[in-house]
Length: 391
Image (cartoon, rainbow, N blue to C red; front, side):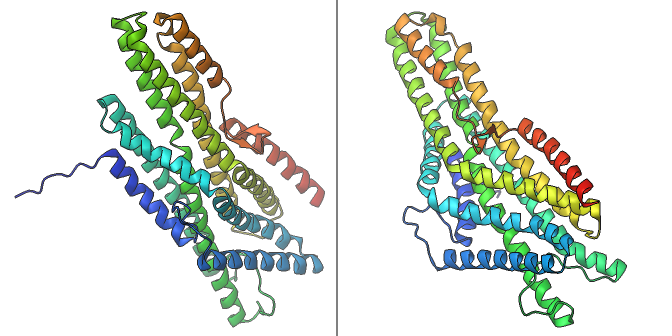
């Protein structure tokens, strides 16, 4: 006898995603989703390890400058950006944990509230879950492929050219890299750092994208409410007794939308700035390394920096498009069939929607694909300038 198919509700499916993200956060010592979260021994251990890696990195830069080996300096500037990104995400998560819990509770509330409503509400919940699943698996594939490629490429190059190549040019004081034992120690240390860095950044980005990617859901819920209002207005135009409760409910949800986007903007402000700045620094250093030659894995690090940079730009673009759609949805509803006092309420909501809370890069430029393209042009110009100077 076949087992009956168990269809999980949208809230249960979201909880399943959230539990996985909580597990990632707990593994990194930063399960900020828990109300009773406190900095623990694992958090301190990870902080010490990240700082040790950065100290060893700066030590390597110091030794390379002393030996006039500026190729290694550029290579380390590519690598240290990843550590800065991961550490900044950890600090950001701890400092702004209240904002994260607030936005997460709002998302859970949306799923619980509207999974029992009419079908068009359930449809937008399912669409949001499909988007979330696609985002999580895309980030997993990106970090998984890039991390594995960075780990195995030195071995492949060594088998082909019989040349020893470090995963990262990060050396430990007192360890002689010219000996076999020293090479194994450094290579093991670099492999561990690459793996932990990949997982840590993946865990942080998954949580960040999970929160930001639910902006379209709240926008779609308000759109559904506007559709319901249009249906009532089609049958009962200018009937305030029937439409006023719906208008007030829409305005309340729009206020929640504004607060939701404000919290996300505040939560991600410094993290996005550091992410973009370090990615740009890494890309420029990588391009100069490729111009100068002598570092076969430079294209991998360049690809990694570009892919992650444009992932963040796509998140900013998603939020920006949601804010634009919100404004259009309000304007396209049958507001002209409302009474004058209700029209004034809709007008206030429309004005507020014209001042959106977009994600930004340090408050200087909006985080979007257009900003990513502008940065790419600037990066190429700076890289060519540096290349000409070095040559």
